[in-house]
Image (cartoon, rainbow, N blue to C red; front, side, top):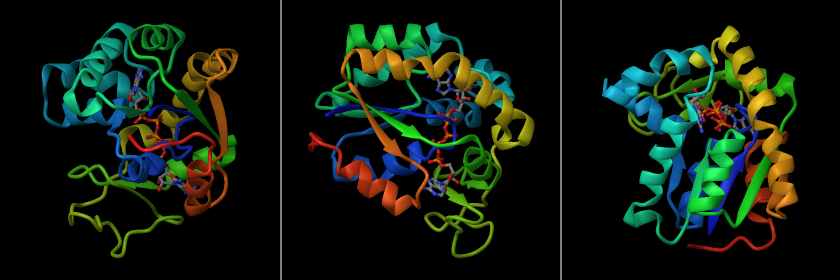
Length: 212
Ligand code: AP5
């Protein structure tokens, strides 16, 4: 099963994908995670994308498309994948449709007020990438990752100014993909506003989802 997760920043795409990769037995491929790991490890890619990411703008298409092509060429992605955060522009969507078209595009819908509340309260573990929320998904011990014991941080792009830039980038460059994939008959929609378990149940209830 080849799934694209579409939706505004903070809609909960990563939270759903983290569980779905086990339940559907396909890898969760997050371009944001790949870029963040590169920044953390100080690789040439990381040095190139650090400032752009922290500002809340998008990494150039050419670079992102090449990276995804290479990742989807991996042995573990032969049967299927969940792409979280890609495509985010029409050129990225055109490229994906040409080299490995998705079966479904799941659009997670959430209003601006909730987006800001979710992003500003998110705390992330830089060691294992797990996300928490100070109000909605607090860790057992404040500031400490439940999974690996790492110290939780606020992502640079979860600070207020960067959130506004990410929302602007989403509206201008990514939201047009909703109609793009609807026109191709691939779009399904999930209301992302309820609590996480309800959103996940709605996702699993989508018609035609299958393992692998
Ligand atoms: P990326 O990491 O993809 O960021 P994003 O799309 O903005 O998505 P987020 O990770 O912020 O949100 P999410 O929807 O996964 O929400 P989450 O589950 O964490 O990209 C970061 C940057 O990388 C971009 O800005 C860009 O610079 C670059 N980049 C990446 N891909 C690119 C591309 N294709 N092209 C160009 N540049 C690219 O949930 C958010 C919070 O809410 C968490 O705290 C969570 O605990 C909580 N939460 C989740 N679900 C619920 C719920 N149902 N109720 C209450 N709280 C909830």
